[in-house]
Amino acid sequence: MTPVSIVASRHGSNARAGPRRAGVGDEGGEVTTTTLIFPVVLFVILVAVQFALAYHAKSVVTAAAQDGARAAQAEGATGEAGRAEAAQFVADNAARLLEEVTVSVDADGDTVHVEVRGQVANVVPGLDLHVTGAADGVTERFRAENER
Image (cartoon, rainbow, N blue to C red; front, side, top):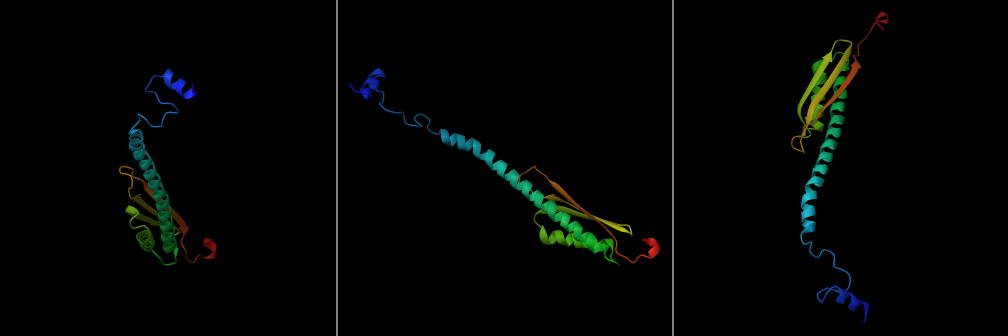
């Protein structure tokens, strides 16, 4: 007798000789696993995209605040000029990225402080991320020797 026939006779007449085929009796197992894991993987990817957008939005609002401060620092400029410059920067570079953008300028004569705030557009519902960028600077003006 050959070893195959011994194995077959030991396990009964219906047993197969040789290795068991993978997946026999597990029909639909991969579909169930994929159905359960795919939404989790997709959610993780969307959260990563949301935080990448927030990181980019933070860079945009910081740059807008710097441009606004630069505009408000110029000799003879007003705080309104800085606010308009910052708002225009956001409109040009992040119109669809940021929502509810507010620009505040505090110019006290010697210094300028510009702050830009906004809400990042949602990719993941319910995950509301807000970003803030700020910049400060000294107002450009002629100062007498005794004021320096």
